[in-house]
Length: 246
Image (cartoon, rainbow, N blue to C red):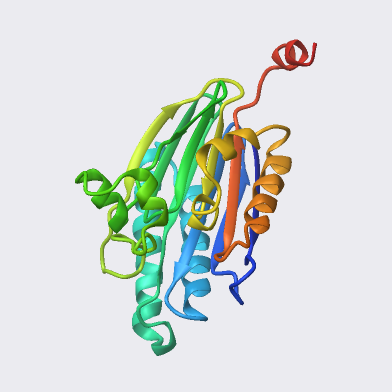
């Protein structure tokens, strides 16, 4: 796996309350994005605590990916929740989480909140994760369209987050991967400003180059929120790379 990530506070916010983590091991990789909430200081504390604890658990726990992701989310939730309960300045804080644990042949995804995971394959982009948000519920009920959801005044209201309750459940997804497939994780600072077809157009070059291009486009649009992007790529064989270059 190739993996890269980037984050920026955007054009309006004074602080960056997003956090991301990338790690490449022997035969697999871990990437995650957290988008904190809860005031000027508490949001960045929540996202940092969650990202650190989640990564610690996944990287140290043996066994299959699904229970590792589930347990990591549980313990990350406890860490944020306990900090919020013990520190008055952090009361009410929480964070989204979207994470991918992937080999070259299979990806396991977990999400809580509205940070997203996309799969890009053969010039087609597909959202893998489902937002835990008010507007997503309205879309599911047929009350608004996905296009209306993008500009809805309540589009930033999420219905599930790490750290706001004693217990939280993450949604799990499994995706088989082909050589050259890419997984993109992002906070809503990207997905609110850059449409899916535009993401697809900028997913050329290396993961590092694609991260930079996506961030630049969000910043060009004044990026009112923090912007974070992580990209994982299932590597092609040397033969496939040579054929593509030919």
